[in-house]
Amino acid sequence: MPVQTKEASILLAIQALQTTQNLSVQKAAKLYNVPETSLRTRIKGRKPMAERWPKVQLLDELEEKALVQHI
Image (cartoon, rainbow, N blue to C red; front, side, top):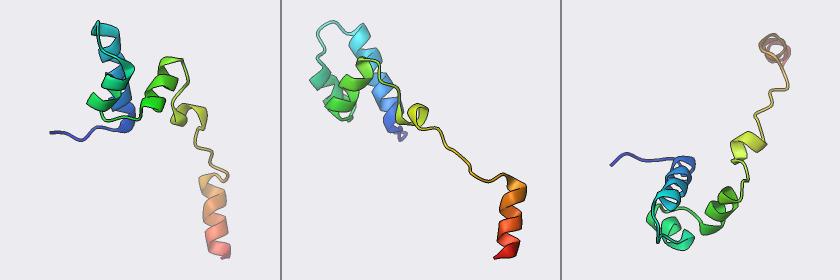
């Protein structure tokens, strides 16, 4: 069985909730092994952490190389 990321599991749980009539959020969270609170906040529209906190690189490649040489 392939290993899924937490994000993929949350998306699958949301999809299951939308397509399965009598599936509760609590049951979907257990079924897809994701925290219930994470699932509820995502259903309410909160963006994933990766989208809320994009990776910020402070130095470009040239600056990083110059710093490494200096050290």
